[in-house]
Image 1 (cartoon, helix red, strand yellow):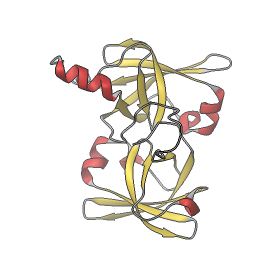
Image 2 (cartoon, helix red, strand yellow):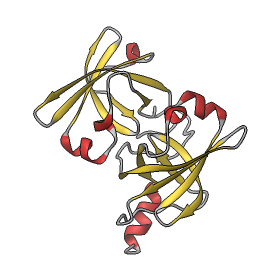
Image 3 (cartoon, one colour):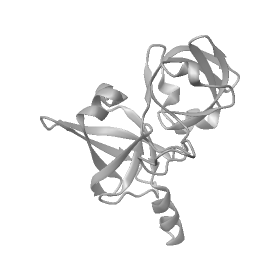
Amino acid sequence: MFTGIIETLAKVEHIEREQSNVHFTFSSSITPELKVDQSVAHNGVCLTVVKIHNEHYTVTAIDETLQKTNLGNLHVGDFVNLERCMAANGRFDGHIVQGHVDETGTVTSFIDNDGSWTYTISYHNTSHNVTVEKGSVTINGTSLTVVNSQEHSFSVCIIPYTYENTIFKTLKIGDTVNLEFDIVGKYVAKMLGK
């Protein structure tokens, strides 16, 4: 389980394909604190550390993950948002994030509000996922509050700290982002037959 509070960024150092799997090797300031078998969210995707060598660590994404997330778009030199799983004795600062991406979305609008930034994200019109005003959503692993909830789109506002310390500062209109919708909302929508 995660909280959506990004700890740091990780840089893609190497990408290796093996059958339908992709092994991503990253470098990060928290690599020395990681261990093999540990779950780490990369742009909101829960992946298992399978190898550590000096300042680099490797995770494996299977085809299912590559098809449903933006990880398949990564290139050497790209950065991802990084969060280790929540410590049982820690504060719960974000919201409940499973690290299971529901679908990808597209950045359709970016507004500089002179001190904050508003991003509008659209998602598949065949999707049964929903957002609600002031509800929670996770974009590339970052826990955020929904503003301007619409049918198959929503907006979020980004404060300067989040902008500077996540990959939001690199997002452009047309970019693909990973979306994990609020877990309570998903269960309510399923129970109501939405």
